[in-house]
Image 1 (cartoon, rainbow, N blue to C red):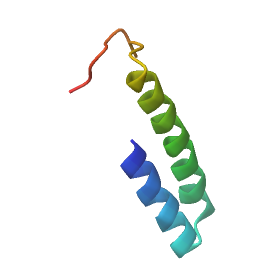
Image 2: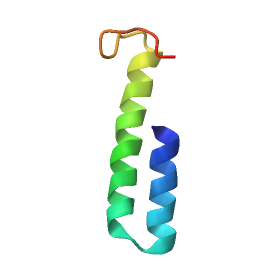
Image 3: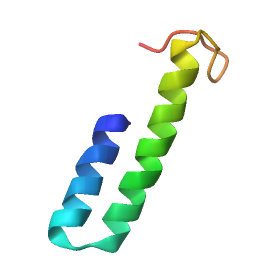
Length: 51
């Protein structure tokens, strides 16, 4: 999710498409929160590990 968010953010910046820019920021934030929750060992969505 972090990678997709970063790609959309960069595309939104370079192509001047505000919708991609906004979606990219939202996906980056959600991905960062999930990454932090997973790193501290807290189960996310009922699972400790996502493969």
